[in-house]
Every structure is written in structure tokens, then in C-alpha cells.
Image (cartoon, rainbow, N blue to C red; front, side, top):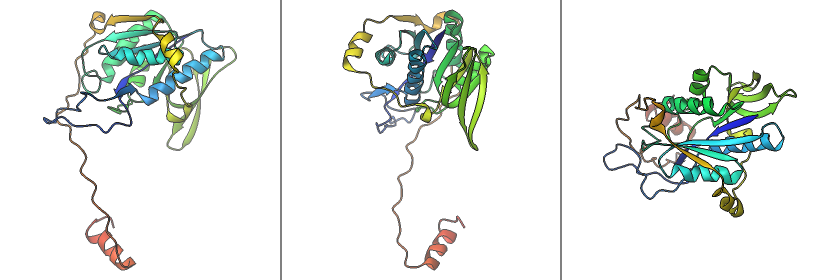
Length: 255
């Protein structure tokens, strides 16, 4: 049984992003990039399924420019067996949108025939939370989104998944093949050690031109303007409850 895990290269979560002067997007020059945190969790879950003997091979795939290979190398260093780089010059935070990514992944699924596709539930740059659902729809596969626990049944024909919903934890059973998107509580990703980073350079990585699939990758949404959030105003001390209520009612207008 093979598993496919999709990973995305994004601005590191600890970086304070800068907006371009023309407000057309985020400035990516000289900014630290890393693997999307939710994608790291998906990779870790694939590795745990492999260590338990449920899958025999974990294949990492990413769409993006040349430097997306760095993110794939990280997945290989964590323990993935091989990687597929879908090369494109489109900006992955604005121009390469979820529908296009889902269509590209569907082509890779047709080629690799995995039993399960793992993805992060969303990327921290666009927060779309759409790619997993779109991929499942294109493949006509069942899906379990926002997974906080994944188990394989004895016959390896279905997954028992606990998923986080507004009301609490929902338990579902999905037959294989299936799409699973990872939530934060699914696991704690392992670190890619230096020896494993060196070994990852020798693992196979296939580079495929994303345009070779004949898919329309044009964005469906246009970003009109990107602005920094307004500066947070300072707090105000009040001398009494009556003054607090007055300010909440007449100034903040929340009462």
C-alpha cells in the first residue's frame, strides 16, 4: 500500500511578513521559507503509518518554483521515500490556487495509484482549506478532513478517523482509497536531523513541468489589494464599572 503526501513551501510561521509597496502581495524577497506546518503533520502521519507497517512507500509531492525542491528535501529527510516536484513559476500564495493544485495532484494519483493521500488541512499563506476537498471530489474518493487521529483497520480496507468539528470530536470510517487532511492535534512532527538531510540528497526526486499535464492553471480569483492590519490601539484605564459600561456602550458600541 502506497501513500502520497502533498507539501507546500510557505513563508515561515515565525516571520513577520511585509507587504509590497504597491500592495499587490506579500514581499517574498530575502524571507525565510519553510514547509507549511500542517503539511509537516501530514508527512509525520504518513511516516507513522509506514512504521506501523500499514504502507510500504511514502511519496512526497509539491508544486512550485525551483526552491520547492528544498521543501521536498525536508520531507525526504524526515523519512519519505521519494519525491515529485511539479515545477511552475506561478506564485504559490496567490497565482497557483487550490483548484489547480487539486487537478495536478489528481494526475499524480492516477500515475502513482496510492491507497491514501495525506494533506495539511490548509496552508498558512492563503488559509483556503480547499485542496483536500477538491481533490477528493475530482477523484470521487471519500475524505476525512481536519483529522486528529488516524487508524487503519485490520484488513487495511478502511480508515478510522477522529476529526475535529465545532461540536467536538467526530468519529468516521472511510473506505480506502481516501483523502485525509491533517489538523494540528494529529501528531507532533519529528525533526529532520543533519545526517538524514545529507541522506535525503541521494533519494530520488522526479521533476515534472506542471504545464505538461495540459491543465489550465490560471487563477480563478484575483487579488485586488493586500494591506497590513491596522495598528492595535492602546488600552484605556477606567476608574469604575459605570465608566467601563459607558465606554463599551458609547465608544466601542458593543453593548
